[in-house]
Each structure stands twice: as C-alpha cells, then as structure tokens.
Image 1 (cartoon, rainbow, N blue to C red):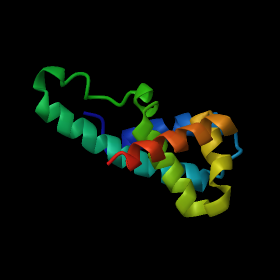
Image 2: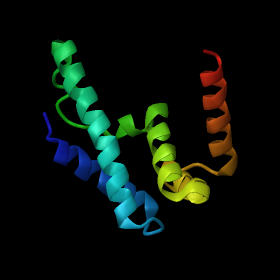
Image 3: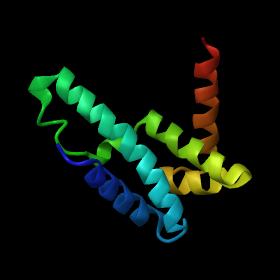
Image 4: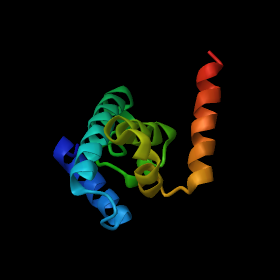
Length: 115
C-alpha cells in the first residue's frame, strides 16, 4: 500500500495544479494532509475488510477526491482557517461556481436535518 506521504504528495500535486497559484501553498499542504489522513485510514481499513480488493486499495486514486465527504473536508478546512473567505478557496479546489457550492451546502444541511 502507498504510504501516507505518497497519498499526501498525490493530493498536494493535484490541488496545486487546480489552484494555479490562487491558493497559498501552506493551505494546500495542510488541506492535503487532512485529506490524506482520512483516505489513508479508509484505504487501510477497506484493504483489510475486503482482501479480494487489496489491489484496489493499494494505491491512492485521485478519482476518490470527487466524493461528498472530501468536499466536506475542504469546506470545513477553509471555514476553520479563513472564516468568511472560505467560499473563494473552496470553489477553486472543488471546481465549483457560487451556485454549485451553495447548492452543495444546502443539500448537506437538508441531509443533516433529516436526522
């Protein structure tokens, strides 16, 4: 299985490319750390739980970043770090426009209010 560092490097490189220098490296690095920690644990657990899928969980796939929980991590990170400016950076990383980000947040809130 890839190391946690490999997960971080892949995620960092991907987000660095997307941001095109519009987001400071320190934020991309910290965000990549949070996301890589989450996915490293998920892959490790899934690899043990589904041994026939060991190959699938041996190396990080960037396609896994297109997941609502990843979007949650991104938005929470920028809200914690930037408060009111969170939307600006979240839209860049998530490749969303203003209405898409607002819709995602409204859907998340609706989902959470179901319980």
